[in-house]
Image (cartoon, rainbow, N blue to C red; front, side):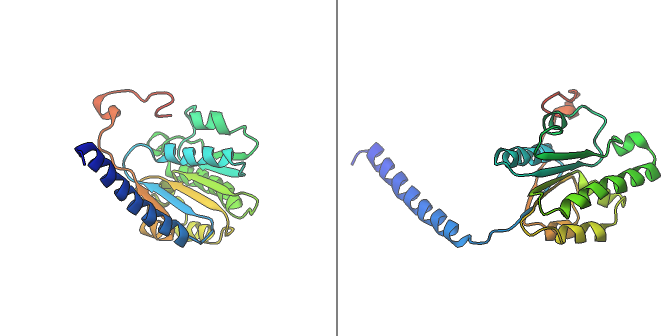
Length: 202
C-alpha cells in the first residue's frame, strides 16, 4: 500500500472512531430544558457572541427579549438591527458607561428601573430567549440585589433560555449557569491606539 492510500485509510478509521464517540454522546443527551449561558472574561466578543445567538433564535422564530445594562448612548448595530423586530422586545439602560456618569445613585436608580424590564421578561413564559447584556457589572458594583437577581433567574419558566454577558461573573452566577464560556484578552487593537470601529466594536 502506497503512502497516500495508507494515510487515507488511517484517516477513515480515525473518523469512524470519532463518529462512534460523537454518536454515543448525542444519544446520551436526552434532557430538554431552557439553558442559562454565561459569557464572561476580559476579551472582546461576549456581547457579539450573545447577539449571534439572538440572531439564530430570531431565525428560528423564537420570541426574544433583550436588556442592555451600561450601554446605551452609542448607536449600536445590534440595537439598530433588533429594536424594531417584531420578535424582539428591546430595553436599554441608556446611561452610558459608569465612568461617564460618575454618579452612583443615578446608576443604581437606572439599573433598578432597567432590571424591572428584565424581571418581567424572565417571568413571561411566552418569551423563549432573554439576553441580559452586561448584567455582571450590575452585580459586581452592587447596583442590583444579587439574591433577587439569582432567584429570578432560577425561577424563570423551565423552557426559557437566558444569556448573560459581562466581565467578572460571580461564582454564584457561574454555578447557576448550564454553559459558561470565558473570552480571553490576548490582543486588542484599542491597546495599540486604534479607535473603536463601527460594525466591529459597536
